[in-house]
Amino acid sequence: MTSGSFRRLVVLRHAKSAWPDDVADHERPLAPRGRRDAPAAGRWLREADCVPDLVVCSTARRTRQTWDLVSDELEATTPVTYDARLYQASAGELLGVVRDIPAQVGTVMLIGHNPGAQDLVLMLAGEAEGHALERTRTKFPTSAIAVLCLPGPWSDLEPGAARLTEMVVPRGSKP
Image (tube, rainbow, N blue to C red; front, side):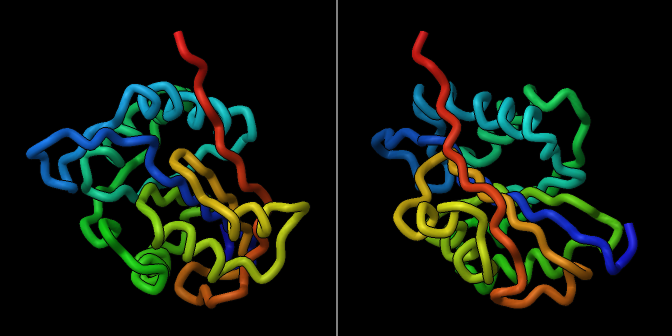
């Protein structure tokens, strides 16, 4: 991919987590609904031809579990980096992580937390297709996926420079 080509940033909020007593926030696992929804997110990514070239995932247990279930559905082997900077990150901190992505990566997926994930999407989206921006402003629930297209290298990414092309919330069905 050349520096003039478009790149895609996929922002995935982790699937629904549980709140067990006496478990630190960083170690909270997925709830049953999260274990159903994460594979649905993976199927959506595969069917939308939005399989990432690289995943940057928070080190929190619920994000790692989300990635494990998403990746099982992708029919691809995608390299993943677990990055502590994504845990409790602001939009500005997440933008710094994205700017560090190697130039040759065409599609990167961040798996993180709110409010940073939602705020990053809103910060970057200078324009949007359909109602994606309005829906993102209203709510970015667990398992939400935002897809942003952007020109130029990751290192040059600026607020308002991307086009929000998708905002979906895949849900799994109950057994």
